[in-house]
Length: 120
Image 1 (tube, helix red, strand yellow):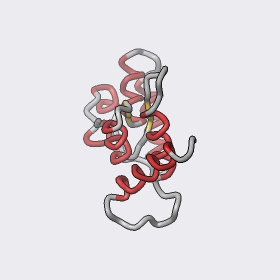
Image 2 (tube, rainbow, N blue to C red):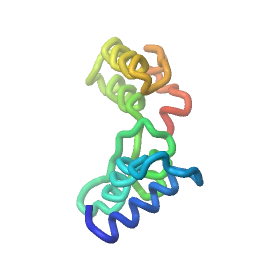
Image 3 (cartoon, rainbow, N blue to C red):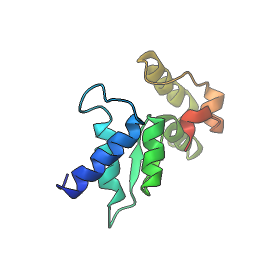
């Protein structure tokens, strides 16, 4: 990441994601912040970010970066017939079992009604 512009923006975004709380360690939220910083300044590419962190997706949107959750991506892949509902549900179950997401049914993945995790 370029310095000082990119790192300064990433630090600003990192503090936004902390929402007034002290960081548990200096790199908390740094990955999402660096991605948003880089993507928001993309000149020749359409900036896009895949993240399960709701606040990071909101921060990305405020910087002009399209951001979606893994489950929203699974829904989009289902409707574009790039993955079966069963395969998407299996992937979703693995994320849930790893403690990385709530439980979603096949119907929720198919319909796109994913509660807050699918927004924005």
